[in-house]
Length: 374
Image (cartoon, rainbow, N blue to C red; front, side, top):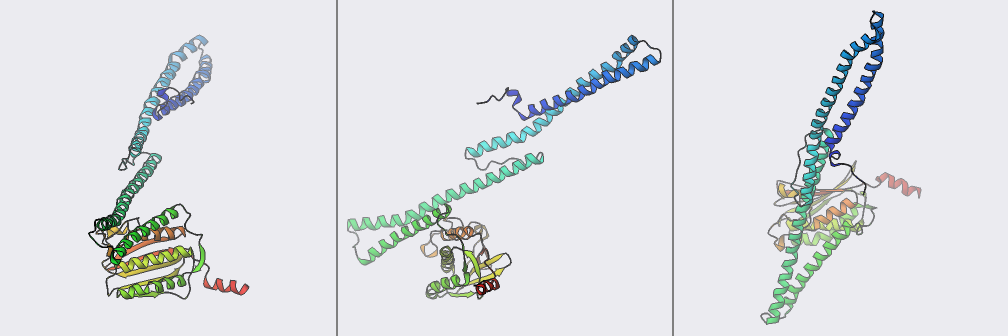
């Protein structure tokens, strides 16, 4: 390991002071040489012209100019040292604070923050550090929520299965068709949860979603609406779609089908009987916007920023009739962002609108030209 030098030279303040002193020595040294050599020769030449001897001129010069130069050099070095030490401490203080806060974050204290004052470079570093600490704090919150929610989602069906099996073992209930159906429902719930988690994990690894291809979005929406229609009819909820004739986008067909299925299922779950759900799609200059809107209670403003998080559910009661595992919207976000799009939610006055954007494909006239060329 290379030597780092003496301890007193490692701090930024000490190094600034050392550089300032060396710079001052060089500058004053050049000035002193100029004054003592060049200035001295000129001074003695002028004194000889006025009748002074060389020894007298030298004595007069040494008694006046040389002493002043030496005093000026000493004073300059002292001033440079003091200013450098002050400047070094002012620069080192916020850096030490950032270092201390970094050690706190490394120890698990994600609430550590540092002041954002000082020079622009140091202030910029402090701002970046605070942003990093906030992101880590948010990730830690999401991790804790994920663990707690995953444990709950697993515990509920497992507890039910355990209860049924104990009752069957003790002869409390009979092994009839209804009992087997209940056991199957709980096991199926665990299987669906496992599959959803596999989907999220594979998507995070980038190995689940296919490369985006050009496809007709209108056809994909129409197929999803037709597939979901019977469920909406049974729930007495009106489902309608407002679509143009054709919208070409770039996306993964299987992932897009899952997106529409999750959004429509989510709307069905939270729309009361007699309500309505509408699907809307349109082309914009920067891409294609698709929205699924439903009437109902709406989503509180505090929850809207978290609805796409894994296992997050606005319905905190976790009633099985009002919500799944809270993974569907996380998958929606993952699929859309993998295709280069964005997702969002708006909920005002009893109307909730989930939307997403996708990169556009060729314009319809471009498709026609290409087809004609073939």
